[in-house]
Length: 95
Image (cartoon, rainbow, N blue to C red; front, side, top):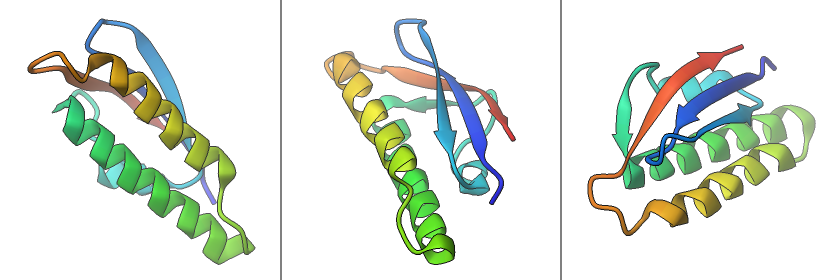
C-alpha cells in the first residue's frame, strides 16, 4: 500500500507533516488549496479513518499510525478553534 505524506501550514504560519498509509488523502486535499480549519479537521478525520480501514482490510488490523496522525491534527487544531476564519493550507501531498 503506497504511503503518502502531506505538508500543511497552520493558521499561525507553522508547518507540519502528516503521514497516511494510503493515497486516499489525495481525494480530500488539493495542493495549494486552503481549507477552513473545521473543514480541514473533518477532511483529515475522514481521510485518515478511511486509510486506516484500508490497512485493516488488507492486513487484518487498523493502522495505529494513521489514527495517531488524526489525533495529532485534532489536538493541534484546538489551538486555533477560537480564531475566526482560521485556514489551513496544503503545501504538498507526496508519495
